[in-house]
Image (cartoon, rainbow, N blue to C red; front, side):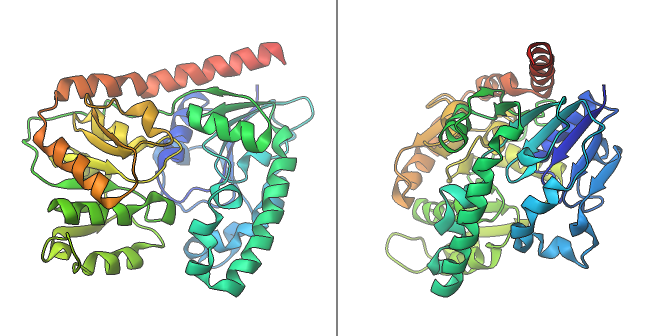
Amino acid sequence: MKVALVHDWLTGMRGGERVLEVLCERFPEAELFTLLHVRGSVSPAIERLPIHTSALQRLPGVKHYYRECLPLFPTLIERFDLSRFDLVLSTSHCVAKSAVAAPNAVHICYCLTPMRYAWDQFDAYFGPQRLGRPASAAMRVVMNRLARWDRATATRANRYVAISHYVAGRIRRYYNREATVVYPPVDTDFFHPDPVVPGRGALVVSALVPYKRVDLAIDACRIAGVPLKIVGDGPDRGLLERHAANASGPGKVANAGDTIEFLGRLSDEEVRRLYRGAAVVILPGEEDFGIVPLEAQACGRPVVAYARGGAVETVVPEETGYLVDDASPAAFADAIRRALDRKFDAAAIRRHAERFGRARFGDEMEAVVRETERSW
């Protein structure tokens, strides 16, 4: 059986790439198709496969502006020749699910989410307050066209697998398709506790993009008087640094900006060390699943998360952390204080996270493939 793996782009090891990594291990003879590959940005398990890229790869310096090429992505993904393959496994949060498989092939899409910016989060990415009215109006035309294409090509996958029940609902709403839920993998062998005594600080590990709501974590930690470390990078970093530097205002601690550190992208080892040393890990945005809370819990650390999206499937209230119903700095500050004052059972938190391990994910995905091949 010839297997093709299709992934939107390879520019770093985030949640989607952790999924892809396990699939590369389970299907070692597969070939990989992706719009863009920044060499050295992903794990050896991914990079050892034959990797086919699109015309995007040939643009000078494209790794710095590939997101601006979004209107080209539908055409580029459709140009991949997958006619040699019996099984296509796409891991998609943008256009990979619309790759064109051979007529007799089986195409299973592991859907990280239907693309947010084309459906329900346009304003967060392209609203007038971010781009100005003329540019926002132009982008709305582009995104409306992209959403129509996204829906029209939803039948190209024979079967959808979703990362959470929350995403399965989005797939049903936007694609009119049902999806099996297989939770993504967490490397619980790598992320594990050690005897270090955590401090009193909070931690955010996140891409710095609008929907992650890192600004909310900054304001909540100011109110709570808790130092905050922020790991990650992205287009909103400058905006967030300016936000953090503005420590004035009622209810905020003096010199709060001095207690907020932007650490940029770090190695997995450095992130693990920070998880272990954090009093609490914060997830302020509405996530489709959210791998960070489970990595933190695998290290025995409690989580304060917004009670929407995938977090309600991964955080057990008052056992592994707190879920916050109100997306306000004051509500998050209150939950952070309660987490700091509560004595959590680190071993119990760890046991909960172990249910989401890599081996479990690989086994469940192989079972989905076998079942789909038998029934198709």
